[in-house]
Image 1 (tube, rainbow, N blue to C red):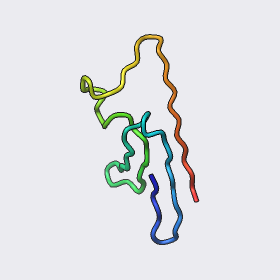
Image 2: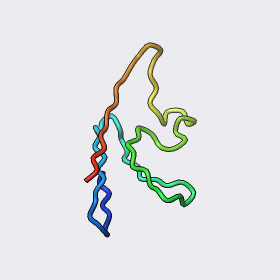
Image 3: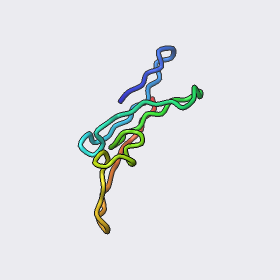
Length: 71
């Protein structure tokens, strides 16, 4: 995902493995003066919906990685 400031050309790039994170999300809360760019592996509140989020068995581990580049 890339967000570019049209005024000054600055860019924020969020890179992630799309197999690990199925969604790239741009969100803002209550008209605050910021936006968040995040890779997600479920939608907001999906943790409360059966079958809508990833679950690991007891003792199972999984590693997720992503990067942010600011230009």
